[in-house]
Image (cartoon, rainbow, N blue to C red; front, side):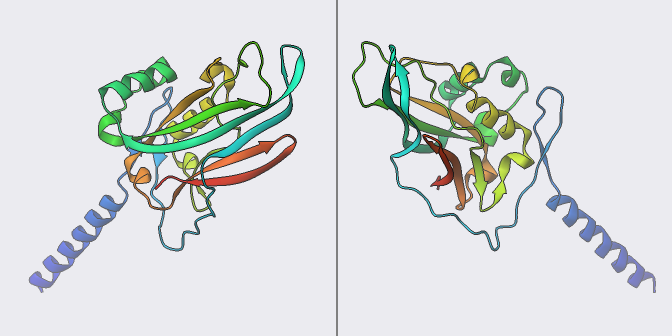
Length: 213
């Protein structure tokens, strides 16, 4: 009887330990708010049809340069996922500022770097380049199937909001540039990971998807 009780206790201990391991969570404090990164079930993920690059994500036929209307486009030319190193970590923090720098993230250990290359095009030469930011349209973000990763991670939410706000990203006269995102490694290595873009061609808006793995 005593042996049976010991076996039952041992089995319960193993079960609790297994549940604790499954429930391991990563916290990303932004401005004092803790938020949990949750993993998703990979079974039954429906991957969206992906666009081939380059792809136009924003187009304005009536864009104003130097007092007259020209066509303007923002185009994603390339996406690249890679490891953070010391140089890219410094650049990332320079772009996002103290609000992120002071959070204590270990980017090289826990995150992958997503670099999204872009270019601006106009259909008419102007005396100067347009002042525009390299950015994502509001509503764009990372998804696995229909699962929006930012809904589970406040750090990703912050980045996506940042990259959809021109005065935060910073306007430029450059015709080519890029934006950077830090993605938790467990998400970055998911074969179903996609970048969902709210594409705007003049007044027409729709979602398109770009494969990241």
